[in-house]
Image 1 (cartoon, rainbow, N blue to C red):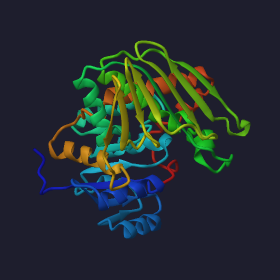
Image 2: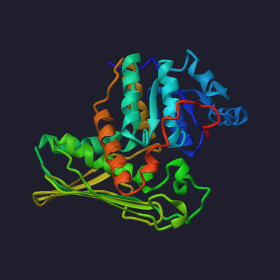
Image 3: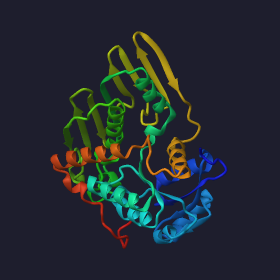
Image 4: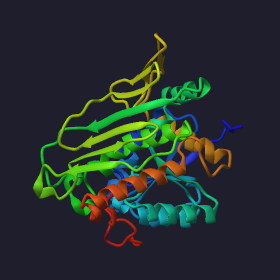
Length: 346
C-alpha cells in the first residue's frame, strides 16, 4: 500500500521545455510527488526556474543536487546524448532516476546503467508517458481480459519543421533526427502491445531518408514489421503525419484518437458493437508517469509493470540497429561520455 501521507521529493536535472511540463504536473496534478530541487549548469537559470516553480532549492551544479540527502528521485530532462553521465552520477549517489525518452542512444548504455541501478538498489526507468495513461492501461486490460489478438498496428508521429541548424532535432552532434526524437513513441506502442499479448517482435524493415541534406540526420523514418502482428511505425521531423493510431484484429478495429501518444479517448469496434474508453485528462499528462514512478519509490519497488525495462531495451535495440543499417550509426554513439565537464547543455 502507498503511504499517502508521504510524497516523493523530486529533483529535475536540465531545465528546458520538457522540464517545465514535468514541473507543472508535479506542482498541480501529482498525488505522490513534489518538486524539491532543480539543477542546471547555470545557477541563475536554475534560480529563475526554481522561483517560477517554487522548488525548495536550486543548484548550479548537478553534483550538488546528487549529494542532497533530501532528493529521493531525479528526472533527467537534458538532450538525450547527455543522459548517460547524469544517469551515472545520480545512480552512483543512490538516487532513483527517471530519464526522458529516448533513455540513451544505444542499447549498451541502457544495459550498463541498469546494472548500476541494480547494484545500488534504486530505480532506473525510461519516461514514456503514453503507456501510463489510464485510457491506454484500460485498453490493454480489455484486450487481455477478452483474449483478443491484434493483427496490425499503425502509428505515426510527425510534425513539420522548417530547417533550423539551431534546433537540436536537426543537429547530428546532438543525436537529432526523427527516429530518436519521435519514432521512439510508435516503437514503444508496438513493442509494448506485442509484449502484453505474448507476441514476439519481428525484425523490422527500416527505411530512412534525409530531406534536408545539411542536417545529416534522418528527417523521416519508417519501421515495417511483418509477423503475427504487422506494424507500420512512421516518424518525421519535417512533415505532419496522421495523429491517430489504428489497431486491427479479427472483427476488431481500435482507434486511439488524435495525439494518440496522449491517449485519453479510444474507440473500439468489436463484432459489430462499438464503445469508447474515455478518461479525461486534467493536467498535461505527465502526472500519470510521475505518480506511477513515485508509487514505486514509496513501495520500495525497483521495477515497473507498466514502464517495462524490457521494452526500453527492445526499442533501444531496434532504433540503434535501424540507424546503423541506414547509415546513421554515428547518431547512436554520442552517449556514454562519462564526464560532465564542459559537455552538458541544461
